[in-house]
Length: 166
Image 1 (cartoon, rainbow, N blue to C red):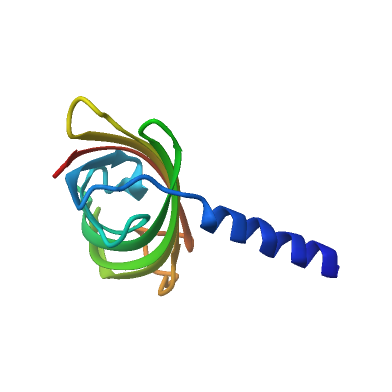
Image 2: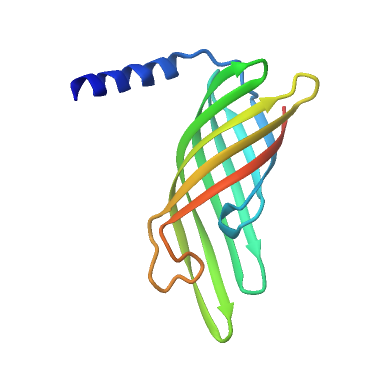
């Protein structure tokens, strides 16, 4: 058991010591995916250091039955793969609000969530464009049994991002 734990710590240390290329100071764009019914998100990334950044995403949904919004903040570590390709992982949280109205039944509430993030991105050298593909598992912390918008405590989210780097 000690060998497994020691090996895991060594692998984590190796991953964190990998050299990352300089990431953009700012990137603004869209993150498009399932996003638990929210559809697209406006996404902003702010470089904090050579291989760390903050990502803020604002998603909303406006349909006949459900109106909702949520904001998610993630702290990310970025590692260089090769020639503009990076992979990244992060952790964070978010909050939001929803309202449901269908067939005479209505309900509303707030969303509090914890999230993780893992993905791959490509930064074009010829243009200030970034493409990314990521997976963000979201765990809802305040789900109630009457919540018709979110009937369980887990929401997997896979999305494609396109951002302008500046």
